[in-house]
Image 1 (cartoon, rainbow, N blue to C red):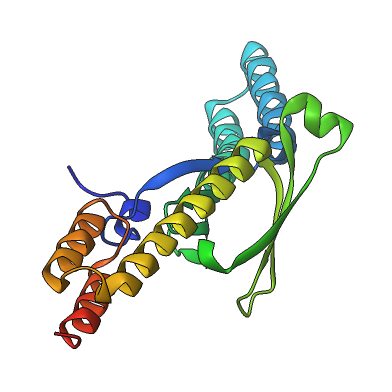
Image 2: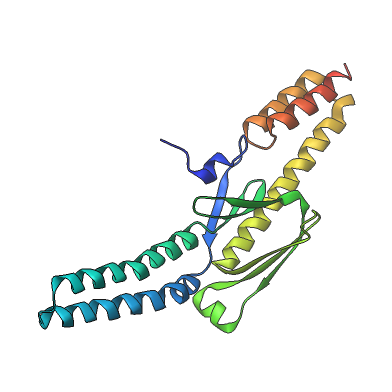
Length: 213
């Protein structure tokens, strides 16, 4: 089975935990005028047909009907491909149907998360999330996303788990004088198999331990 574009972005042992999009209010606001225009044109075509107007005029009206329909499909594709993703290592914002624009922040660099929900947001399940990071981006703002509470919860849980794994790795390396080097390498291997360490991190830690032998 072919990988999706999102799956192709995943690193070794990295897993997708949660995916959401902008709330359906955004999509409705964009496509409602196009739906109304398409219905109006369709009603006009029916009226014209009843009055036995020439087929050439009806064909012209059908061609005009394609314009709002094409615009509607375009808006749906844009909305569907604007995704916010939480993985075991990163928070990703991905936009674009054909040309892709991907921005991600490592969970390790996330300093704080701010959730803002209006009364309607709480009622219908949308909100804004500001992610404060130590990277050059500073603040990542996700506007009117769906399921913002679950998004924030999944992100904070993933960050906490990543930090716990990092502490475990550091403690294991620090205990090099108390345990045998082969034992520590084996433990690092288990962490690598479980997705805690990437292949680069595993090789780096392994090299550090081997220098102590």
